[in-house]
Image (cartoon, rainbow over all chains, first blue to last red; front, side, top):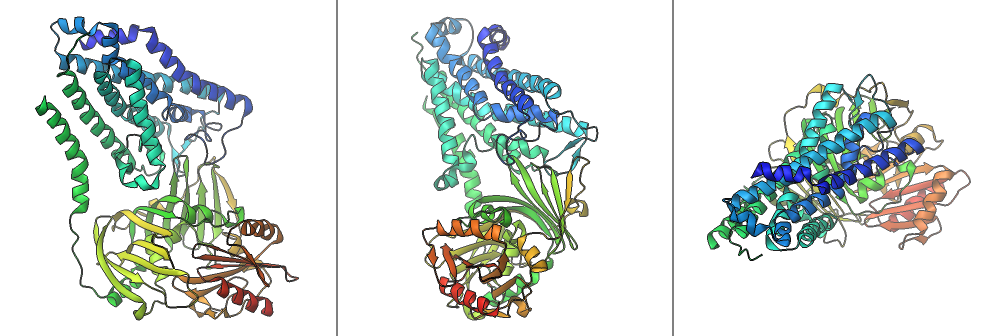
Length: 270
Length: 357
């Protein structure tokens, strides 16, 4: 079942259109930076964007910083929201369940598919932006890359930390995927499920800017998204990275269970 | 159906409630007296530690390039990583999602690293300087506000858990008429006396105007390499004669300030040069000469404040408990007087200053 769903996801043009859109924004940013040679002022803009003009090897990280706050979660919300609601909407859910496939198994296959999409999307964005960084922006210095703390990272250290950062970004989307899947089991509208998920993320972002909601901050899904930056400090600052992983795994567990409780007790009429 | 949803609720409950319950467990109270705790705090200067500090301030002091990060330090939330081997060997990183600004102290040398501009600025350490990130750390701020504290100004507060430590508390209520700080609440490690959390309140404030607290603490001595800065080949290294505008003025401006201003004695009884720091504990006043190109934009910022007032000696404005007075040109230049003192004290101090100069 999981294999079938994965193949279906990979063969769908929609998947690649979304990934194409995810790649388009960093590409536009790279071209603009290369043409104008004008980075954001220090302390402003997405992480690493002010540094890529002198070191293009950092552009995959800058690209993730560009797509992570908005584009990537929207893409995951759309795909996750469509997982069950889309089948219901198109009238295929009844036929899927008519096969000897348990609801829990189907739900798991849908979740794995959304996670696989996240992995593919993050890797494609990182790979394309790496090439763009090398071709359009500053060349990597032979002495190594400068960490946020001013020390020098060797190419091996940079590669290791970048891999950790990609893994962290993927895990950061697990909570979004689980929430979208849960909403998808509640409604017959894919757009409704996606909007519900995006609404939750917007609420989280708004509350993060509110001092009165400070007690809620450690539990908000968007709180630690950009903490992958801490992997490039020296020594690495694990504090928020660990907390971010914990929060995402918490959302994954609770909302996957909620999706399971909802879907396995749901009347399938359509 | 009920059992499945119950599983969901119990899981969510366990994930949210467990950390809150651990945090809310009762603290063990200490019987240490206020004066004993004060002594331990005074003697904690050599305690080595490392940790993570969060500070927040609500003071909208004028922003100026000449005053470095003062407006950010006092008016925003700051996250600081600290490695403190001793008072002459430490590192404080002010971290941001876009980079970090790090301060290194090695002996008589200070290094300031800014990631976004890839610059390291090396300058000599100065006794007289503007506040920087190291002054916002609970241990340094705590010891500073308690400097000169009198027994009748202190009362014990119940213990509070800070960075995993059950820390006994202390309240300092300044008795001086010049003070604009209502009280300072402080919690310290009972064993080492290291201040872990400091809250500073204005006279009529229900909420602190400045809070700084350790969120993580390690009392092992940090390794020597953590406080060492080795610039990469791409780093632009600048050498400055002075660490900031106050240190520069103190070293080069042609003034000799008096031993007291506005009834406040010079800090530590030292005879000031061109820049003077007066008062004790949380009642402090700094007087420094400013160049014309710094003074005039500053006056415009002060005049834009709702509390701004023109007096005989200059423009005065209060930013919470912080008073600022920029004198008029006295034929030789301008002076900025700033501190946690009343507007009347600032005016008296400015009058004293202009009479001398």
